[in-house]
Length: 137
Image 1 (cartoon, rainbow, N blue to C red):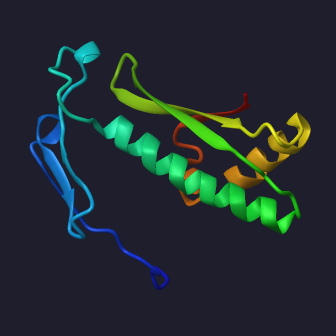
Image 2: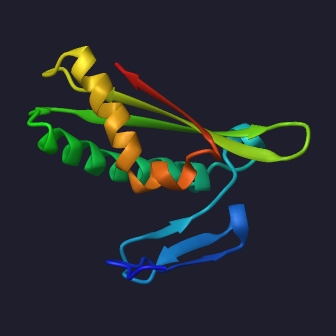
């Protein structure tokens, strides 16, 4: 492995009904099954954490490719939906990323989404492992 420019450290206890926290003190969450899965819903869950992390990382990649292509994004946001899917054998996840960027045209936005998906570390990590749908609102 090459030299890391940053390493995050987290400690989780109790699985989906437990806790997770980062050693930097900025993340300290209670985990709970969502109500839709029969849980209390009084904590966050791995899918929500993944959606937030993926969204933040992807927006960084989007900004990079936009700058490299000379595109000014203007006001923009990304909505990330992460599904926990059960098949006949086990569980897996899928994701939908929807970009809202009203100051650029649809074609440009779609091209930027595809380019960002190629360079985003989360996209690279999940490529070939989960279905990811890219959309422009």
